[in-house]
Length: 164
Ligand code: RP5
Image 1: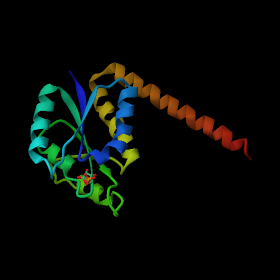
Image 2 (image 1 turned 30 degrees about the vertical axis):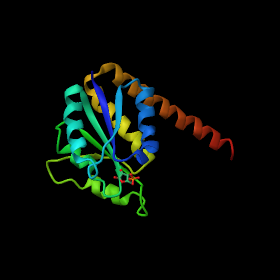
Image 3 (image 1 turned 180 degrees about the horizontal axis):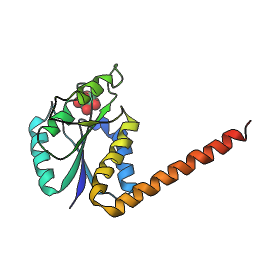
């Protein structure tokens, strides 16, 4: 079965990454979420990625904080698209994870999104946009979502004008 694989570096990353899971659920996209660390459990990460690909993972989302090598490690194990979510888990506020995740060498891409909650949400949307290349029904849902977002901007503008 086709699904999105979400790997988080620690249980402490789960709360933010539930924002990603919520969006996938809203669009009825199958996913699984596991804890596996590039540093603390490299063998588990290795075995999981190979197995997940065999089971039908089409896109990987890897989220980690601090010296966040998880997305890069996942990218080294698969040619499926890997989305990296840098998380704020230290006094550096996620900039450490951002640089660790985004600065991949040429030929080993990690599509890196924003730090924290916005990145978690965008990782879900980006994963769905990738799946939607071959899934017309999902593509329609994503287009409808954009229409709703545009309508919301219009509604918000009206309430601001009425305050003047
Ligand atoms: C990273 O270190 C994890 O992704 C997490 O964001 C951070 C801190 O992990 P814990 O010490 O909370 O397990 O590997």
